[in-house]
Image (cartoon, rainbow, N blue to C red; front, side, top):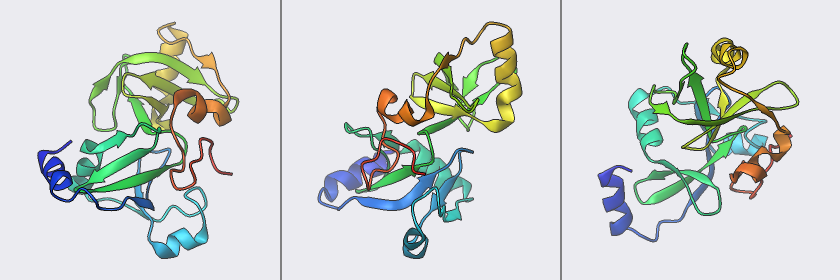
Length: 178
């Protein structure tokens, strides 16, 4: 977490949390969801405006964390902005050697790989559970074929509860919305 964020939290400890205003999708993109977008429905129905400002995205990702209840949030100064997830709190990239990285290229340790009933591939890392980016299924398939990865079968609707995260913090949901 950025030092400036820690200072703001100490200075203004009573700022209320924010729900439904920020979303994270299965491609690793961040979305701002204003009142009009929220009125259209949940994140899977109406994503909102895709964020494209690199510095803002980097700031969000540096201050992105999980609370004790499994709710992922962005600590925006003194305000906790809870994140609506499309399916998982992370989207992982796979390098040609099977190495797992964050969207920004930071290496993470693969703990286990998973495949759901729809053929979607996930990886549990030392940072948490994430979906494998759709552009990297080739490299993941090679890692499986070469026996570097051995995915276990999972049901997508059980991922959040099994791996301890909340899809929609506003509703307290641990399952993807339909």
